[in-house]
Image (tube, rainbow over all chains, first blue to last red; front, side):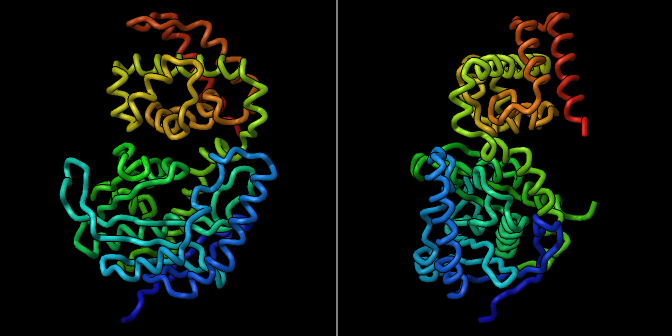
Length: 211
Length: 162
């Protein structure tokens, strides 16, 4: 089965330059190796620095404990799951796993099928870390979120997206992506649950489109 | 996967990501824990000014607290605590949503809500002066209206400076 590969671009923060990248409709062994051999050590260095500096643990990266090998291993057993990654400069810059098993909770769309974002993470050097350097590449999160919207459209779900957000990304999903906050989900570690209906999926796409 | 995810789209979004992060990032990246402990008194004064600003802006818009919570998609309980409890530390997202709704500079509101390190001494002084001049009544008085408009002008003026 062929894997979809799309040429995209990221913004290199240090130079302001556009750099070519790829958005791929799969997560293969190389991406998992990149996580094991590069993401994990970098995240370890970050948490060590934060611990040494006495930074409040609530401000540490909340994805530091994520195990992408375990996530991918489980995901590959689920026909309803799809994986995406972004690669740039010979390195995996972002990973995402989607599911089509869930339905909408927003009253206007209640019961309708949607794409649920199981996990989405950008590489540690692309994250905003307290007292840390500027992210290396911008645009990874947007491109992955757009991929989720397009996957939803391809399934006939009209761009509808749902996810539970870690607290550090609540602002991102509501303020930048335009998702609706449905409040804390007591059945999901008390994380806030967000949904993106069709009209807001269109609005998200319009943000980056020519006027 | 739709091939309308173009490099141009991605770059435009990347630039917007940077702008969005800039409005919020200092809430997480510029707030040393030590400074929280050393500025408790000034924090209370800023919180009072922030609470007063939110309350008067809401009343000027003829909105109940619940209506404002719905309009800004923020937690109703938090909005009540912002207006009533000077010790309450607002969530950065709530401050951002309020700034968007009231068309006020998010960075300045984050500073007032003591979610970022104070960089503007004049804003701090004006915030305290505003809190001292304004009071909470059912209808905005001419004095409150004038005070609110004057302080909003300060916020807007500060945001326009290079």
